[in-house]
Image (cartoon, rainbow, N blue to C red; front, side, top):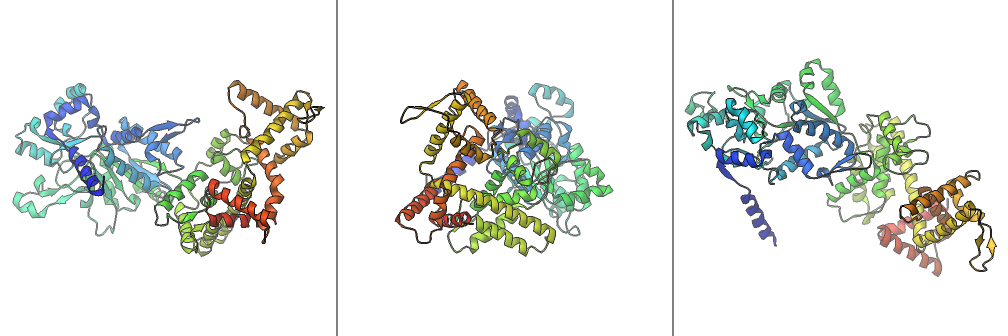
Length: 632
């Protein structure tokens, strides 16, 4: 379909979503689909659940609703959804609280709110998320509010729903004047939530308290019609267009709530606890909406310290949203932000974002008192890597040791700003890890607000990230030098396992050429085991451990390969790399390579480009840099 056809098809789909009928027709809809009368909190939880929920081996839940947008926040999101939205959806008392997301800048708080808003817009356009309102109501209110209080108990039991709230002043008047009290004839329409149209989604942002009017929240008198209707208490002379009015049935974002003048916050006390608010010269107006706000920790502490805020504080559910602490997820954050820019065509060398992520996460971690644990080991454990001497259960202990971890440190915006600087300044079409680290370091030099002590600490983290990249660069180049790396690793593994099996079973081995019996090759086995620090006294236990692992795999019908045992895999790789180190060093550092050396360099470059994601420019830079590292 071309563009115009798609536009026509979209308009047709939108038109197909519209529905109008009487209140009697709506009762039939509720009878067959009670979820149309769900509360705003229940609708939001259903929307999140409908996108899918997975659970990993540790019981950590992952909500697909946030896929591709938020990374590394699985634990905070699980707490937010289960402790607040799920409980609120079940009509527990937390639904009578303001949801306050509290965390450092650029931690994802605004993104969460934006996703909820956009999600509600989409969800209201599905069959599962359909909702209906009284036609012409400025607050798109629930039609079941038409049911008299005296009849609600038996009708709730018949329909399987709960009816909460009363008609707004406008609908109450219209019921008498337009419909003569015949509620079954009241017109009902399907409601499509939209932030742009101010239907079910509102946003309130405080400005100058001297000039901002409370009408922005609760609506105002319509002076153009007051002379016609003669009274300020006539609903026809009032504009029900405040954010609390328009956000009914959905969500209202209260931006910078803790900076707001107190008179605006007082209206939230009744809204959160009783589900209504006061506007003009009317009775309390019912509202069914989630009020969500976000702030940083400093502002929240200031707010809490003021005793005058105790009433509002008791009506808040505060959800900490810390920085991500997983390097792999931090890389996803940077990749997303780069793709959103106009620099998508600039090539970023492999591991450039990874190196920046190491720096960022290191700044957010807290020192541990656990023996043998440093920040780098902690970083690797959090990222799901194997760290010798520690297990998965240690991760939970480390998190419990520092519950506020992630609430401070370098924010993603700073790093992406420095990456952007590197992308702009670079005179080639590619940047690598060193370019990114250099840009981060230059940014620290220019940052006037960073103390000398903090600057030294951050520069140390830059050095650690650089060292990690150096090791990875050497390993990647060495791996590329190995012809048929997997085959070489398999051959070395098979040879090692044959010797280990003979050693543990006190057997001899046969020479593959002469056929004569010989002792297991101790020199070969030790040359591999020494790569990972297996001592002479520990070699027997290590070899027996390998045989037990092979036996376990065999019983389960699984094939044991060189990656089936993490430490053995590391030993095999290091042994291969050690054998090739001199070849790599000579080839990469020779300024005038001979024909054979040039052929090897070209072959390695080709493998780096085809198999590892480098471009010709950064592949050449990697080889030169690795040559200089190996020659130090």
